[in-house]
Length: 491
Image (cartoon, rainbow, N blue to C red):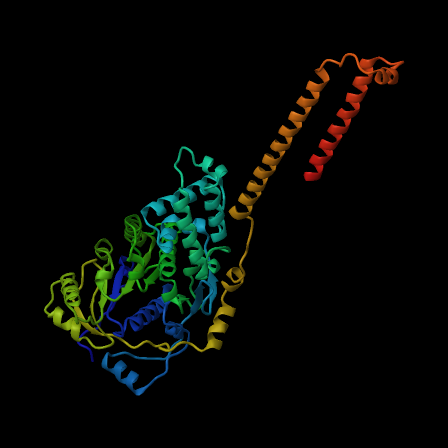
């Protein structure tokens, strides 16, 4: 039997935390174990299923001699159990209900991170979105964004930005190339409507257990920026939409941010400040955020300082940089009787050094812990199980089919066409005016005097001026008729 049971108080889980450890040390199983416990307590969770095996939470686990032995060692009454799971997909890959959001909702800061823009390009993108917002133009998808950028560097669009700045054609070209690259990665399947409502993460099953929302990410390595910033968008949207609840007996949602280093790598100062503020304030909305990564150094110090819980699996120290990172990690823990520098390099799979906040909000002593075994399957669920989960989900009917309504792309195209039509009419009106001026000038020209004998003979019996005016009148009527008919034909 264990010397002492180590648990995570529900009331402190919204103080956030970190699950860290080298590859293969058991981080995924820790996520699964925590999600199971939270679901059983009625707390919904969100997690990213990078390797696909967390979908196994929908399938009861399979007992084995090794598993039974481990359960006995830690005093666990193990029972095979399936948990309520809903599956989401990002960018149309994997099995699940597709998740979408609009460019307007996503915002320029996160979009700049996805596109890999520098500070100058990011400020230009912010200007584009600001202008679209002021005009009431909905940027629903990437086609809307491309059309808006192209319009704002045109002669007509550049005039729109006078007084608030401008966008150089070179900068616009870079942004458009990055947008095209993002589209080539399949991001068109993510940006659009119907936009996902983050309130759908706060679901409980009919039996009162919290629903585990698993985002399927079979190709996260191909689009790391989109994945990490999408998770940050979810957090930011939750922060904006949820009411304040303060400290609660149990969190409304626990959000596991796997592969957290992808968010912070190459992030702008402004984005880092936004992430830090969101993490600091979202706890008052009853949401706990647990970052999952290999080493604590992957998380900025300002964010790390706000994480009350730590589940640290084994670290490797094969290089001088690894050794320095190990020493830095040890310094972030409370004083302990353990030699943490040695312990963290000798932990076995499924073992971790744990410290959390107590019910009083104080850090607990560091505990060398053997983790329990998950009760659900540690292998991916079968394809037919996944298909039935998706079909039975109440989210499927709402989000499965994309909607393409009128937005900036269509409105700007109509606006450009209208401007071209006005330009054509202006040219035609000018040509008509010049023709009328010519005719009027001809009318005012003095009548010719004299003439040949044959002409006088032909004009005998009529006033020469009357004959001239009749001739001019015939020409005038013919020219106007031709011009008017020509204009209508062009229209």
